[in-house]
Image 1 (cartoon, helix red, strand yellow):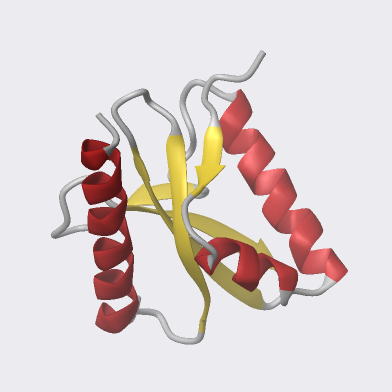
Image 2: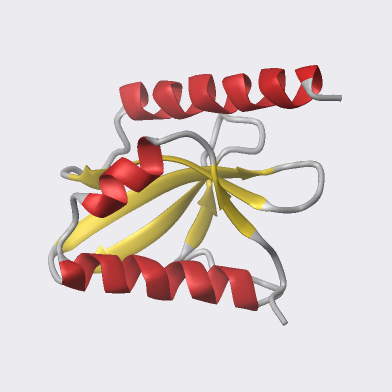
Length: 115
C-alpha cells in the first residue's frame, strides 16, 4: 500500500519524461515510487521551493544529470506533477518556477469549475 498517490497534470511532465534516456526514466520511476511509498520523504528527494506556497520539487539525479519535477499536494493529499527540467546550475531558474505556478493555478481553476 502506498503512502500517497502521484498524478500528472497536463502534458508537461509526460513530454519531459518521454524525452529522457531509459536510464534517466528508470531513476525518475525509482524516485517517484519511493515518494509514493514512504510516509516521510527525505528532503534529498522532495523539497519545498522557498518563497512559494505549497510548491515542491522532486529531485532526481541520474549520473551527472540533475532533474527537477515541480509538484504540489492537492486537497486529497495526492502529489500532482507539473513540469520538469534538467538542472544546469546551482540555482533553480525563476522562469521554471513561474511556469510551474501558472500550471498549478490552471489546475486549481479547473478543479473548482468541476465542483
